[in-house]
Length: 101
Image 1: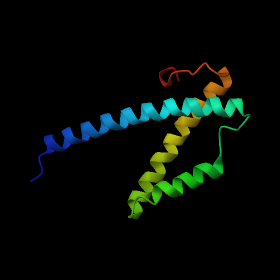
Image 2 (image 1 turned 180 degrees about the horizontal axis):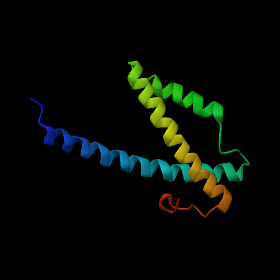
Image 3 (image 1 turned 135 degrees about the vertical axis):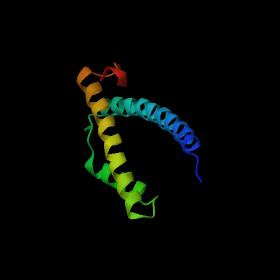
């Protein structure tokens, strides 16, 4: 039988890893925002996001997993866009922290 406490400990480790990866992703999103500002590019790139979602969903074989990946990354992309729009509004080189959002 599976031990619930052990399973929860394993989930806690994974959750901490996800948080660390999200922090890294947001830092890179700041760099992307700076590039977009410098090159007069729009924050939202529908074609890029659709292609990225297609690629990510291909990493999962089952339909439920594909829906999970699609939903998760749509949220992650929305968060990244929110950060980028904040940087765009504030101007280049201000890089607001995600905590200030």
